[in-house]
Length: 419
Image 1 (cartoon, helix red, strand yellow):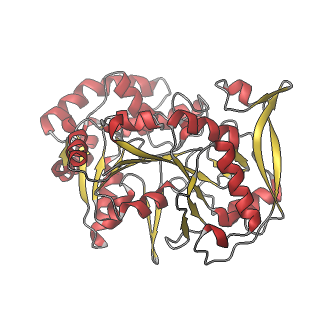
Image 2 (cartoon, helix red, strand yellow):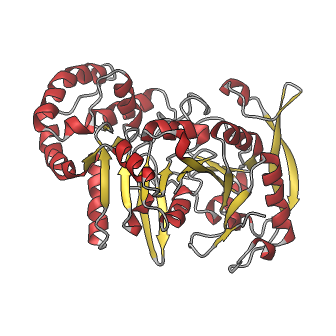
């Protein structure tokens, strides 16, 4: 059985949660490999909507769910999600990698202080400072968090440093006493879930079981290949997924790139195809484009093919999942950015320089609008205008579209058979 990667191809919020939910029914293990509670995945099951920030989307199927070493864990958020699932009769089967980093209150305070001084558009959840501590070798691993003596020793070593850091922003640090009072019970609650997730995945794959790797954010927020510095603090590529989960590339069978039929972004940073005015507001409302984590209105724009081509090339997408096609239903004209123009030159891929990207202008191709009905069973039942739009995406990207979503419900999905 395969290792399947589900990756965002844009700026996050593409609809990865729905794809994982659909695939999880036949999977044995679902693994979240990166990010923290700065991400939000929405899963709709009948009339029930679940909004996860840390728990893998497979939790609603009672699948074995894992948080890999690359995840930054906020213990409060995770505990809340576990309690929520238990109340709903879905007690999670969960394993947390011993190497995963723990977000502490001082990380959140630092994130807020830095955002006040130089706005990037973070969710202010402490993700960046937590990953920074990992690189500086002053981070708190899950295996140390759940051992009281090691947790206390870590705080005694690190808190003086954090007090100085926060002091440089004229902010006060949380006391050791308060941290221990709040977090020791959480550590005791979560300790039972500790495991070597890398080994769990390996043993499962050796037994021919199906494992899903679920990403947070999207390609253009990758710490290396995204629109730096307006990026997240973790790796969002296929290579990053394998590294964070601790699994070999030899097991990979499918790499699914998830993209909306248009594009959205939260926070600051360049957005070549961004729309303003009434059309932007219309798409935002139709697509309910408000952050799962922050509630902030998302910036909206047309689909960006240079971005999608670059994501596909670097991640090695074997297929695409196109989400929210229904949001474009009823528009008279739909535009796609097929390339950028900058200083008189045509650019077909995402430039490395964010300064250059900010100067790029879109070269658009226009498509006739279409109207979708609510019960489409296959590609042939789509309007010809919608098929033309999807064909262009497929041919321009060079990757087949295997999944088309035209609504939040599971039934509002078309699985495209291989020809």
